[in-house]
Image 1: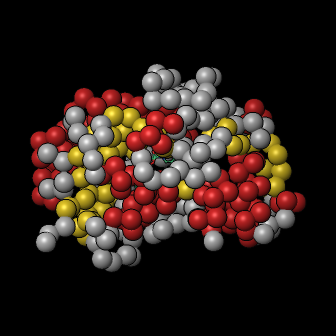
Image 2: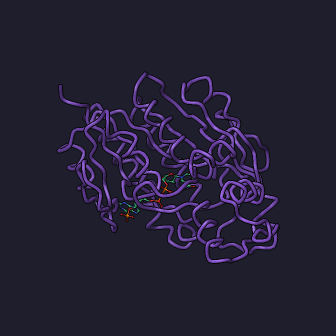
Length: 293
Ligand SMILES: NC(=O)c1ccc[n+]([C@@H]2O[C@H](COP(=O)([O-])OP(=O)(O)OC[C@H]3O[C@@H](n4cnc5c(N)ncnc54)[C@H](OP(=O)(O)O)[C@@H]3O)[C@@H](O)[C@H]2O)c1
């Protein structure tokens, strides 16, 4: 029997790699890349530049997937702040084109947004809270959400927090940047006053693959089950990797003059996601154990 087709945009990205590996057994996987073609076989790789709207439409029409998981985006918060026009094209206009085309071909779309749609003033955030982004990145991801919701009823908008783990195919993560720094004997300064609900990429990928089935439509906050600062997260990671605490220093977010503003506490309430999903959402210790054991 033919397997259902799934199109994963951003297959060359960090989360995309986990999604490919999680989807391969049950789907015929088509994954896109833009600048970095992964050396990974067993799936179909599709070059796709999100600044080319016509190509987006023909790529979806030609591949005709039953499901699209749209992860590709400009993800560097400061670059987005400096390159608003390009961010608008890639994160908003392309998302709109994907969602509209998916509506015409009948594909279900799962869109990756972010906890940075919130300003951090009223945590923990649930799906009913109105986005109030501080950065252009956060704003662009929110506009992407609105475009998806307007274009295609058969959609899921997922807001993850920081996604961590070693690369599954390509890409990198917060935990990997720590691991690499510690490997080189470098001391890492980590915020003790910024709070998120980080999630292991493999855990998130399982939840996203679960959402390809069933008929859930709407927004879901899918983070780990624990509110934590980057410093606390670093301590858990260092313990799991057998790294001495002398390589971690506490730091305050207020001491950094970022190009794009960062919220102080965008921890998410994940109770609704827990009620929708069978996939268990791990706390930091468990997620780190699964990621690095
Ligand atoms: N990582 C996190 O902590 C985090 C947290 C919250 C939300 N998210 C969201 O989750 C999703 C996945 O994040 P990630 O960390 O996996 O991202 P990532 O590693 O930065 O990967 C970004 C992907 O987007 C592709 N891309 C960038 N510009 C493109 C363009 N112009 N045309 C086509 N493709 C383009 C890249 O392709 P090439 O590399 O081939 O150019 C890459 O595959 C994103 O939508 C992000 O907003 C991530």
